[in-house]
Amino acid sequence: MKILNKIRTNWSITTKFLVTLIFIIIIEFFVNLLFFRFTIIYTKKNLNTLSPESFTLNFYEYINFKDNKPFIIENGKKQISNNDTWIQIIDENLKEVYSFKKPKEVPSSYKPIDLVHIHKYDIANSSVFMSEKKYNNKSFAYIIGFPFNRVAKYTLTFNPNNTQNFLGGEFIVLMTINIIIAVIASYFIFGKRMGKPLDIIINGIDTLSKGNYEISYSEYGIYKNVFTNLNNLSKTLKENKEKREEIEKMRELWISSISHDIKTPLSSIKGYSEIMKDPDYIFSNDEIVEYSEIIYNKSLYIQTLIEDLNFTYKLKNKVIPLKREKINITLLLQNIIISILNHPCYCNRTVNFHFEKDNIQAFVDERLFKRALSNLIFNALIHNDKNVQVDISIYEKEKIYITLKDNGKGIAKKDLDYVFEKYYRGTNTNTSIEGSGLGMAISKQIIDAHGSTIHIKSDLNKGTTICITV
Image (cartoon, rainbow, N blue to C red; front, side):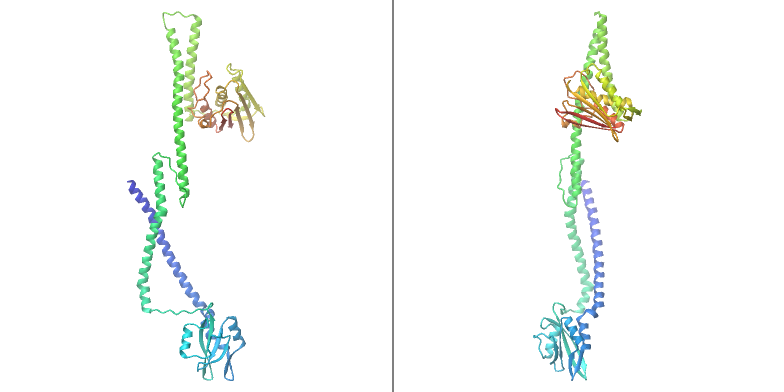
């Protein structure tokens, strides 16, 4: 089937080429025919004014006689001079009786055969033409010579019958043979120049369809743009494949981490529950309160984790409606920062807030936007050391710009593309704060849902900057 499709494709391209070639040959034939006809008409039209024959035949008007001897009047001499020619007049005995500008090589008398020879061929590097002038029952012949560089005569000998037969039969056969040769030659040239690159392109597409993206072609010829796009497609598919594999690894690691995060509080819940249901053990009120609080907190953590999972997939599928309203973003950020710094775990942290206007209005869902900003700030504090400094700024031009910048550990360049993926988790192992690894992903999904944008840049050991445009 693959071979059949390949043959069908090549034949379709070749057929189009052959039809085009034949069409061009037909057009060329008629163009040449019209050009040939125009040339003949143009030549005939200008023959009487431009040809040396006409000049010679009409020159008798400039020949006069005095004492029975011929001579050229002044206008005739001007014609001879202007046309760079020469003239010789001979009598009935073939002897010269007058000449003007005659070259030295031209004889003064002739034999009949000499006249035939010079008329057919040439003399003194001149092409000669002859006519006559009659006077008193006498005939005087005159010879006019034109320089070779202006006028040349060639004798053509042919058999009219053979020529007619050739034009009637052999010519058509010859033209047919030439067309067939042109078509065959063009087919092989076309097959090499057009068919071979197409075969490479088809094989390349087939290779890509099988998941092999390790292809690279030289970009040349009429298909240069196609090869360029094919190479770019291969590169893009390869990068996407590598990214999918990386995300899959992160997903597996995330599932493993989530499983561990669920297993740990479940173990605590199970352990304390088993102790509390032991009939042989009598608990004090303080112990009951302590164990109950541990079970409650662990249960609350698991509940939060499950809610985060559910929430992120609802955001992804756009089933959470946005309740937009005009709010003061500056005030919202102030309240978030105050709330975080009032938390016992972060009361000694450094968070600076910079703003130009104390009332910057935005049309957003306050609850969701607060969650997105809180996640980003918590992320900067959780995944860095306690001495990290976080600077938050907001300003308004055509849009609202919010920047969160820290001087913490930074993020490796290879991880930057995955920071907002659901399966990415921070790298700080020195904190006891547990997390689902969904905070950054949820923040981006909320910001995207508002039609806003979020960008991140980071350098290891220098810090991270997150820019939000609302």
